[in-house]
Amino acid sequence: MKKLFISVFILVALVGAFICGCNNDAVDMKKRIDALEESNGQFQNRVDELEKENDILWDMLYECGFKDGGFYSLQQAYDAGWITKKDLKSIAYYHNGGIEGNEEVMGADFEPQPKTPEAIDKMTELSIKQAYIKCYNLSGYGKPSGVTVENYYGSYNGCYAVVLDSKYIYYPADVVDEWKMIDGVKIHYTDHLVIDIWKVNGD
Image 1 (cartoon, one colour):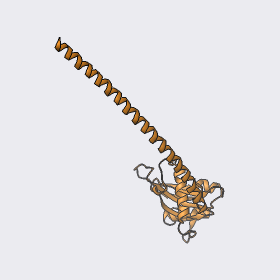
Image 2 (cartoon, helix red, strand yellow; image 1 turned 45 degrees about the vertical axis):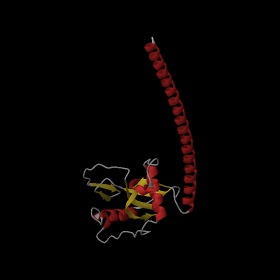
Image 3 (cartoon, one colour; image 1 turned 90 degrees about the vertical axis):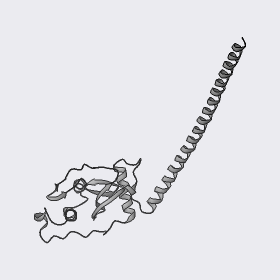
Image 4 (cartoon, one colour; image 1 turned 30 degrees about the horizontal axis):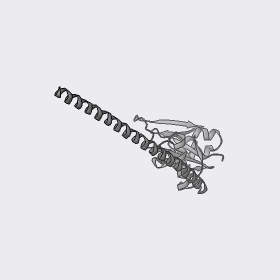
């Protein structure tokens, strides 16, 4: 009888300890959930603050000369009348490294138009890179610093002829050797990077 009493006492004690442990675990869990909810609320407030700061930053960039522009293919820019055939020849000359492929339309004494400006200024470069991020829907994670202006072939009536690359887009490793023609002017591509025209919206 004494042994049975001791066994029952031990069982009751264990059950009590288990219930206490469960209660303690429940309390601890509630505290953790409350802490996480508070932390999440603080995080959301910080996100809201950063979005406001981002809006202010973009306003400052526009005031400093940042321009909102879009990308177009050479064909689109030519069809729209933004660049002329003479412009096309100059772009092809710079890209192809001379008159190769365009001997008939250019002639042996062809001289391309000087690059004006000779180099892209920093704010225009930032504008072009940001337009690239927007064009390829990279806004969630892409940064202008991850975009590279591989080549610049001049500005024509406010249209910048550029070849861009980035660490966000991956191209096949196959060999490219392709000629594109626009109104008799040939562009030689040896990789997947193509010439784009960046133009300020509304211009």
